[in-house]
Length: 380
Image 1 (cartoon, rainbow, N blue to C red):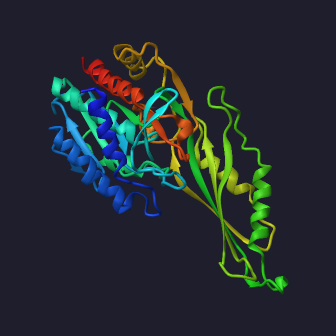
Image 2: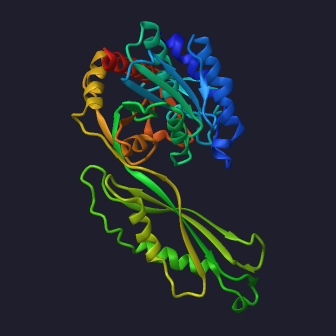
Image 3: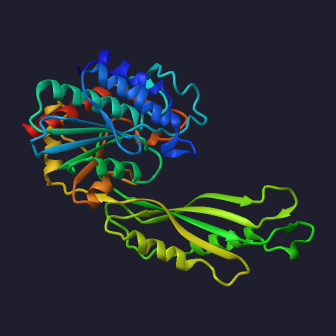
């Protein structure tokens, strides 16, 4: 089952079905169709099922005896970063690299290689006979920066899992912890006027500049974490309007990314930013919370990490390495609910959202074996 002849064609079929992020986010028809028209038929061909869908259209596959309490959830993702400037992003061609043969295509470093590996591992474990419960889900998320999709799956399950694997590229290392994130949306309202008479308007761009200066100088009030480093506040988007020539802008919208360290309270972090914004100008400034993800930090000697270390050895990979991730996904959602969870998958983090994205075939095969060994170790 864990062969190049089996896994590589599966990955290629996943990559050749584009499921890019758009403004529609989880409601994008192509993302939803990737789940129903690409992944679901693969599951059927593998003799698994039946699958079901939650209220958002996320796929849920539950395997193993329903009477067994012990369970593990594998969260995989449909949505990839847009093709953007990546050339030939959906051919899924085989290429030669300095590290060996690889598959090239959008999403292979982030979502789709881990999906292929997890699906193959779950299939083999099911064929061997499961002594526990495996929940395999394909989420319509992947790039949205919020827990909406996994919350929907959680609501659709009769009972939460004992642990969860967030299947995402982590350099094939165990993402035992990660920063969280909250988006902060700032709107500056001014008054439009012809640019030949700027004194008749209120320049929203000047108001935005005042906000940027205040936040650039802001002390976030959080000590640096010895593992995760500092909390950060980073502007990620700025837009102004009206989109017209020779016009003093009456609206600026900005987004800031506030990375959260484990143990931080999101509302407190938001309040520090909101309270630092200038209040003495002629503009009207509004600040609101945007999408949010919890930080995560898993104990090194807990049940999940202990089992994972053994799974790496069972897969012939020796001692597993761990990493602390600056990026966030759904591990923190489970951690917030007292469920051990890590991010784990094949694919290089440095290739995320880049113009060149490929994955080593050897990493694909190795991670399928690790996922499989984790299931057998957990239930064995």
